[in-house]
Image (cartoon, rainbow, N blue to C red):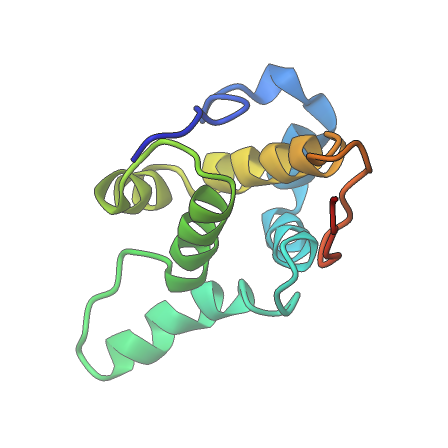
Length: 130
């Protein structure tokens, strides 16, 4: 898929210390913030906390956080970021905290970058340019 790279790397916590500290001290809160910034229900990431327990009760192992993966894929596709579903799965499984921090940094970067046409883009807002 053609496009650009992520604004920051997976382990680039020093790029935004506030996001890193937020994710380290309260990753579920950061995940809910990311979900809200992307225009989804803020409680969506809580499925990642509940899903393994529910699935294991039925004997189904679950190692990929479904909400985290879905948001990662959605953000990557919306902003045309290079990558693949396979890389998204691996990233979501390897370091959940780092993945959420990277998504938070990306959304902060995208929401502060002027949209095509010169106006500032707001989450959930539709901009119409001539």
